[in-house]
Length: 308
Ligand SMILES: C[S@@+](CC[C@H](N)C(=O)[O-])C[C@H]1O[C@@H](n2cnc3c(N)ncnc32)[C@H](O)[C@@H]1O
Image (tube, rainbow, N blue to C red; front, side, top):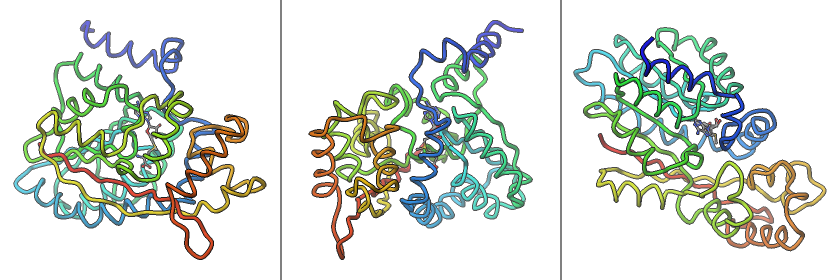
């Protein structure tokens, strides 16, 4: 075994070991998987993203794939793969005769298993060759650099995961370098000045303490793309969801939503009464709009397509 391969395999072997435990635990396992699934049910986030990608991607895929003899896709932080399978289905139906590969970099073993189970029951994906990289994006980057022989991709996507990477600029630079000619890097992130951006930046000190140490919205991503001189286009994905129950202390749904929105296991035990009151006031008055007595949180997203 070459030294570089040895290094790469050690890197894999250390996942989940004592050394990995020292790293920040940004990948979803256990209660955070449940919390995320609960959030997805309540927020309509996947439906909103799907609507956007289904309107943009068919044209993009046609352009990317024309004249190619095969297509390679890379998903970073794909979670349970619900959006990946839809996007891959669009790609497969756009180019039914082309061989397609999908590499998936996802640090959560639980969500990777869910994704694999979803693939095995999705009939129109059976011709796609999957490669599973159950590891942090940072470890994948190290492994690729150590190996030297770099697989390039036609379409790379990072949906709702850019908050978790250690270094925004390095990550964008690395994945952009993996694009083939004509390829696209799609980053979907909470939009600048939306509800999440307002909440997380106002309460940065209280919230940016665990997996997310530096909150990023589309503002930071676009600034980074500009500073690297990369060409991109931005599409806004409008979305809101009902957080009225967050203002009822006795509501389990309200508490579970607050847990996810503040990345805590127990919202009520994690902050002082003053901080909680401030957050709830901000959520109602700065992050949301009210209609017919209900409070709707502004959870709009940006879909950013970065050119190769
Ligand atoms: C908010 S979820 C989004 C999942 C999926 N893209 C979606 O939209 O349904 C964030 C995902 O990123 C994964 N993740 C977090 N940090 C990561 C890292 N450093 N490298 C790879 N995946 C990571 C988590 O395990 C989780 O699956």
